[in-house]
Length: 220
Image 1: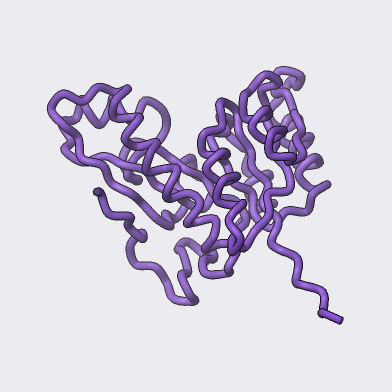
Image 2 (image 1 turned 90 degrees about the vertical axis):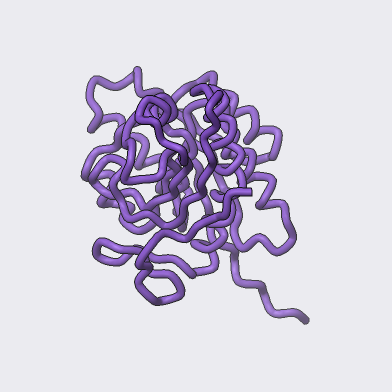
């Protein structure tokens, strides 16, 4: 008689929109050797296509509509209650367009990842592709970081670069960056589920050693 297998780490994804990064994670999780299981997808937009992607993959969903709450604190408290029902090992923000309160972030410290479309610390916030073009940058990209109280300011785990062409627009640059996102995010979530990355006091530990610079996915 075989011994019971150790349960896979539980992944909970939060999204607000179409869910392309969610789809990349769903596809990766179907690989035989993927070390985690997506147990739920949460959303703050009732009509988001991310919910349909989750349903098609037989993943449980829940909606906490931010418009139903008078304050950010009330929304976050309700969202936290939903998340805790699943007791996830990691929370993956995949295009989740809400600024989370300090109490929420602290409650899940070291267990929450976010993806941002720039080479942090450059261009926190919105409109990153337009800002990179306006600055005359020749290189742009994506960053994956631990979530801390500072907006887009948590320690960066990994980045992927794209070259900016002379005829790039914000839209074409977004497509280039998104293609890298879909490769990089599943890799980082895999590392987390394997126990290879952890959050130190203000830095990333990779295989038990402080990470002096973000891991890089080459531009090709």
